[in-house]
Length: 418
Image 1 (tube, rainbow, N blue to C red):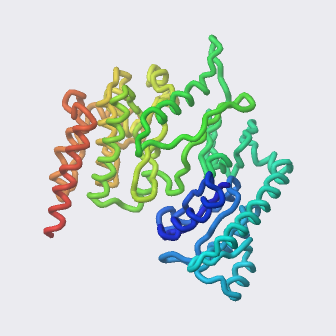
Image 2 (tube, one colour):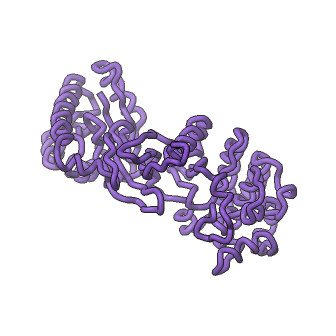
Image 3 (tube, rainbow, N blue to C red):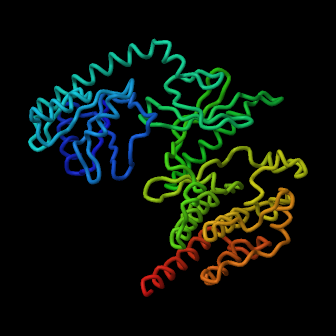
C-alpha cells in the first residue's frame, strides 16, 4: 500500500500512520506538507499511489479548495477527504467535488478509514491497469524518439543541442522529476559517451549524498537513448530568485551554502567548473541544490577557445585560468563563487561585454568593480574570492565558507543594533 498524505499537522500525520500500519505494516506513506511544499504542481497526478489522503484545512488554506482541483484532474488518484467531522453537509460537499471517501479525524473510525482506503486503492488499481494499455499511456511515455517505461511525460522543459529536458511523473519515485534524455553516442572504442556522462553524474551524487546536491532517482537506457531522472525544482533556479531581490544576509547565506557543497565536491577530487545561477536550484526553505556536475568537463576544456559556440562553461562566471584554457583546481570554483556573490549583492555581473572573448579578457585583466559604499565591509571577501591568481584566493572552499559565515554573523549583529 502506497499513500500520499496532504497534511500540515504532525499529530494527525502520526495518528493516520498508526491506523494505516495496523492494517498494512509495510505501507509507505509520503507526506506532502502544504505549508512547506506549497501547492501540488498542476502536472502531478499521483499515479504512483493507491490513494491520496487530503486534510480538511491547515493555516492559510482550505482542503476543500484543493479537493476541487485535485479530484478533477483527469487521471488523478482517488482522494479521501479527511474532515474533522463526517457530517451530512461535509459528506455531500466532498463527494460532490469528487472525493472517493470521507473520513472523520476528530474521532477516527478505524474500520471506516481502512475501508475507504481499500475502496480507493481498488479503484486506482483498475484505473491504472486500463490506462497502462491505452494509446494515451503509450504516447505519454514518449520522450522525443525514446519510449521510457515508468514515466509519464508532462511537458518539454527545454531542448538543447544534445539533450532534452522534460518534466515527467515517475510512478516509482511517486513524484515529478526532470528527465534528461540524450541519444546514445558511441566513440571509436564502442563506449557510449552519453551513458558514461550520465553515469558519472549519477555516481557523484550517490557518493557524496550532500543536502545541497540534486537528488538523482534513476539512470537508464531506452530506445538507443540514455536518460537520467533527477529532482524537480518547481521554485526554479537562483537566477529567478535573484530577480526578486536578495538582502545582504540572504546573499551571504546562499554563498555559504554553495561554499560548503563545493567543499564536499573538492574533498573527493571533483571541480564543478560551471558554477552559475542556472546550475543552482531553489528548494523550499531557501535551501540551494547544485546541479549539472561531472559531465565530461575535462574533455570540453580542451576545445579551442576561439570557437565560442563550444566554450565549456559560461564566460561571465569563468575564472581567468579557465577562460584561457589553463590547468584548473578547486580554486577556480571559488572564483566563480565570488562572481555569484558579487551579482547577488549588487544585482549586476562584475564584467559584461557584447563579445564573450572580451568578457574572458576582463576576468584576467580588468579590476573588480567597486561594491556600493554600504557594502564596503564585504569588499575584502569578494576580492579574495575573485583574485586574478589562484594562489591569492582561499586555499579551500571550507575556508571560504567560514569567512562568509563570520561576515554574515557580523552583519546580522550589526543589523540587530540598527
